[in-house]
Length: 212
Length: 213
Picture 1: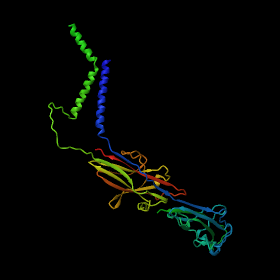
Picture 2: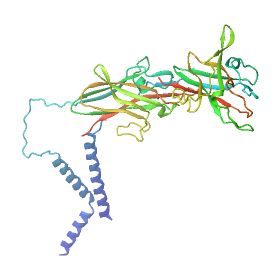
Picture 3: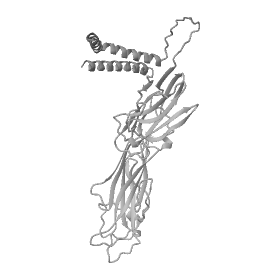
Picture 4: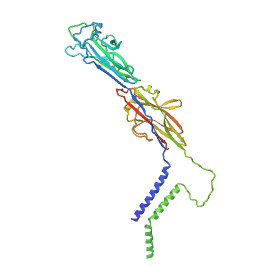
């Protein structure tokens, strides 16, 4: 019993001395380290881009028993169901340019008269309503044209197979609402037969911001 | 005979009953060992001669500091931009200059790490923002980190740069010097803008220490 106690005491003493040696030697190798914490906040805050396409309620082209007509006549169509009105809007904060395209997508004809009118016999005509001299005036964006697929266009996102009716831009300085009217008629060179034919399009708007 | 036996027994008992003696002997042995390791000698003959020369040691000096030289990046209404444009941002508050300074007297090497710590209120994603770092070399700036999206560390580094921050650059210094850096940050070219303002904010930190060889 006494021998055990003696051994323990010896062991403790040796351990104590060893710790002392390590502490003395160890202090001489203390490392230099540094931490510098930044105070300046580096911050970027994005601008905003909102673009919308709105179809005027109850506005659409639905012409039955359409007969061929000249472009001069077609451009003057104005009654209900003869014109399609819609709005393209953009709200921008920040220095950016948005390229956008108004496009017509040809839709397959179905129903009791599935015969599709050929592209060359249809005229599409787009105008923009602007305020001129305090009055709303329609300004043509281009001359009446037959449907012709012009896509794709990388600058606007216009896909393949659709026809570009108009290409334009919005910027922070030129943003807001733009009002458009689409007209569509049977070209005067179409020969009416005993087989009725139809033609359908949908309007889409594509926009893409231009990276600086 | 009996007396001899008794005396022997007495000696044994004395030895067993005096454990402290053993401890003292052990300590003394260890002390002798240490003394012999550190080379102190116990001259038997005492001799004294007073020296005239002062033999001095002066410790070296190690210092590191981080200084923010400009007000930092503060861009509003930021829109996506190409790297070519971003790298050239030079307007007021479109870049951030800072300096790492080292003071070294003696033979030592200091190592350092510069990192960007993202603010928790950032709403832009890491992959929607690019960071770009240059170092001043004479009168011009050279690229040290090409434009790259914010890339957080997966674990803490040796020098203590925290997991989740982005390591911008590392360096070493063996002499007293000032190392100037310029940081730029922009919205990545193909980031999608929405009708909502979003932000991205970072602070630059420095960690470092002496390289022990």
